[in-house]
Length: 319
Image 1 (spheres, rainbow, N blue to C red):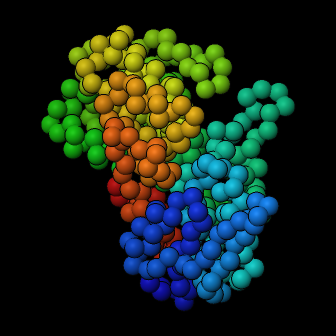
Image 2: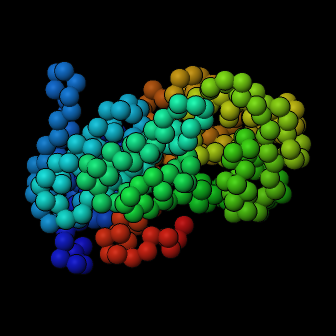
């Protein structure tokens, strides 16, 4: 593709090479030649093995664990391209780390999401392409354009096939009050009713289910969230809808498979029948369970990249 005199190039750092390769294959171009390595003291080294002068460059990098290393890889590659005279640099961040630190929850807290946004901008990125920010207002932390994709349509299309012509047999459940809007939109896509888990969190990464708002008895439940981190909220909600609510089966859908700490063990031992995830965060074999179904995000990102390259609106992407 060469619509306006600049060629398009897709590069990747180390966090999610598979997605970058799938995006490039969808666009019909090779992944750019580069190397991201580390010196013996842990400093990150980036080498570009082809010219990017005058090129439209897209760097694919999820800032997942190890979060700080992956952020530095992205920043250094942006800097390398800026100094190599790339025409425009887009940071393609399927999963944006630090997104949960988007406000001052208590006195003297940092707003780390804003700091990361400033770092990406200062490094030389011209725009950002990401998916399902934990808080949508993070788009305003950037002084450059941000294209914000959503993963719900991909998940919804999968569950539509599972539901078939029986939407009344299913209930979409929000695992907490903060995900109600997301769950309501998801339920609208599926034509299912909605229920809400009302819980209180006594301390970080520990959740306590208090009440179920809505009717789930005798229904198949679909829990929807933007990410699964330690899986405490998800597994407690799944247990609650079965033991307290009387649900017959429990499924879950989430965009980002962060899966830190005890998440894998919790999901393995839970009542969840299937967990549908997107591949914004790479799943290694040791973290993969038979309960997992992983759907690709590359087609959506490839379409968005093509639209950005052609200066067409991204908001009209059809899913």
